[in-house]
Image (tube, rainbow over the protein chains, first blue to last red):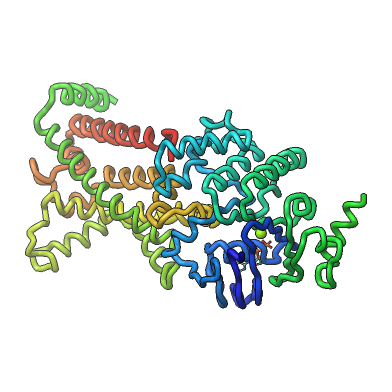
Length: 244
Length: 232
Ligand SMILES: Nc1ncnc2c1ncn2[C@@H]1O[C@H](COP(=O)(O)OP(=O)(O)O)[C@@H](O)[C@H]1O
Ligand SMILES: [Mg+2]
């Protein structure tokens, strides 16, 4: 089932068309990677799909129904979770940070505490629970950031380059842990990255976005093995690196 | 030098003896200044938040006026309030001139722009990614502002302290609209001006000690509040 869809979407800012997407859909249960060069419009697409920003033109559909990205759509937005490259944690304990989304939803305290403990454990950061979140290392902070998103049991998890700021060993370990967690929860995931290694390791399908257009979409392996004319220059650069 | 030492000794005696007049003046000062800063805070923070978070046509002009207001000379504020409350003025029939209400109005006028301006600046500095993250966490409009106020707590409390400093130090406007009436609108600063003009340095020094202690204690409390570890 298509959980999210775009129809004739354009996003225009300062007279520049940042996004021009006639058709796009995210299947329930998919683990979709979005790759493309810097400035291609990946983050803009994420904001439009997660109802954080309305497109200039066109429709965004949730389970086949057109919905508006406005403040009345709180109930809809609360079905999703977003984690960005910067962990953007609040100046309070790790526990409180992970609890925040559920607190905002006025969830029962005991339930919140149980869930927080569960997710901190899942991400191997249970020992940091009482620490101030601003004192964490980059890798720890990103684990807390992801726990803060997944605790919401989102219908769609949106990730915008969550590993990009991490050094390689930290990143490798986190990606491995994260992959297991995603397998366990089978959360529908929209994963933005500019790193083909991450994409290949984590995703089932892949969309390549260049200059605001989706140039190719399909099974991750197939797209990487058979890039089209538009995507080959970008994807082949990565492939040259692999064979080093 | 002798005047100074004599003054200090007399001042300490005066404070320790619990002089009724000094007590009244201090009480009026506290009442007036705290009321003024409370009004400025309650009105100024929401306005600063609105101004900092939203963009609308004419926002820059509004900011210019707020910033001018931050440096508004108190005597000018006093002049406007006096004209407003003058018998034949727009609010003349309220009979507020030369009352503590008039002083509060003048003090709100000089401290409100500081609180609006510094709150707006703190909110304008918030990373737009943070705003997006908060929205994405499922915060309602009010919850979002609550979280942002916590994030900007240091700056907001600094704004309140700056406003309070101005209110406590202010003398020109209080003199003009309050009239320094004994047992009524006399506050520490106006009283000091009067005592100095009469050559009563000892009394003036005593009053200055009290004024500084008040400023110290209130600022101390606010700083403790500001520096306290936060919880969300
Ligand atoms: N609000 C905006 N106004 C104008 N240009 C923007 C705005 N937001 C992003 N851009 C530009 O739009 C392009 C796409 O941005 P973005 O979606 O962040 O790309 P990506 O995430 O793929 O790097 C970039 O060139 C960026 O500079
Ligand atoms: Mg981006």
